Length: 621
Image (tube, rainbow, N blue to C red; front, side, top):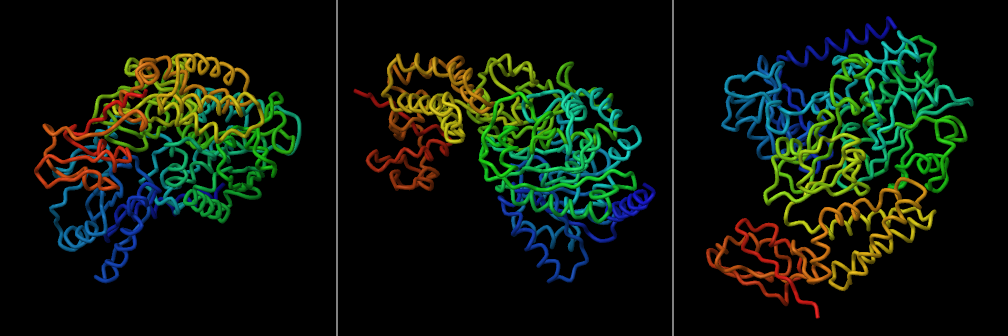
């Protein structure tokens, strides 16, 4: 291990040199959210601008720091000053920052905050971490995301990387499992099974070789927690896998990741190679006699392969279909051998627990749900992005304090992705933990939170999620294959105004059949969106069936749009988004909407700031 301490010393020196650089250092947010917002163009422009002006400056990539709605982020650290973070930076703004702030010394462009050592205000600039979206968070697994260059292993090492692994070698496999037990960590993939028990089962199971699999097949619509962690800090996942492998007694590791995550795959491959070069992966790791290798298996994107046994089948080269349990993978998994499967966030949390101690980690969260949880906060909320909060934080705190609430009145939040439930306003003070969500009829899932306002039709939402799970069903068991399809058919009838009250009764019966008769978690949880919307938003179903009316003016067959002349200011925002030219009228005068040309895309309704677009119910005869 002495060789590692030399590596660590060199890494710390490099990190300190970067922080105390005599040259400007520029950090560009190059996660998927940043790239989607134009960070790639900013990156190329910055490098060209620096070369053109013969500037001596370093330009580094970082991952997603959290507030995706403010991407691309563009941080500048000038000599002797803290790192200043600027948001929503395009090519033009980046050039201006270089010319004014780096070359000229001052800029009128105000930074969002500084990323200095403390959270105190610096010359009129508040700490970045005091932003409304960030100040109530507790960053443990995300501590390096947006801070370090994810392709530079020295940055990770300098910030405490691999200390957890070293401690593991000191206390031994049983000591590691005991530390995880003390922490109270439960699986972050959604089921919430105690992590230490899973490890202990696999360690005690007979059979060789044993396997460790990281489930990175994040398939929930609107979820990007695992992807962002792998893009922003791949080393924490890999260190977590090393610790887990050492604890259960395996030399073979797989990362099962969907091929739709090319950036995460690229950064994982870079990280694995750099760890191999330093003797942190491979044979005789740090001269301890411990061997461990990791293979990346790219999945085709089937949602069902997020289920353990279907995932294993896919790695084995078979069609991704679940099998009945027992035996559980810990006893008979990959190639019929003992296999431990954890998701990305679970494994990414492990190094922090070993570094700081299980007792420290158990100080966060609730009595039964310890620690923190990452969430993808999306939908109709003002501040969208990646967050990490202690377990037990209420939905109200997440949606309103961190997310800034909704523009239109709040209606519901979907937790747990397509397999979760839609919870109404009465649940806003519900603490987010495994038991509380289950009691309300939803699930934790991997961490997707989709916020909806009064402009959302809950029947349409249920149809959307059921359609997704129906299409993603592997078709192995009849209740899931046929039941979800029939449920979608009924929901489609309801949204078209063609349903009768008997259809709702049939729908309710199908939810029970699919839930109780399906083989795996996909089918067992698929009815949740229907169950919860029927339970908490029954009035919307009745309006569709009895009155042939969509209260939210969403269902195309039940609505016709028109301009409310008294409210229309003639701002022409609706004109600019109408794809068919159905809305016309001169600026500053009330507009007209031609129902013959209107395709009911709803774009005008969504963009109008004055509620001047109305959705009227169509009477179905």
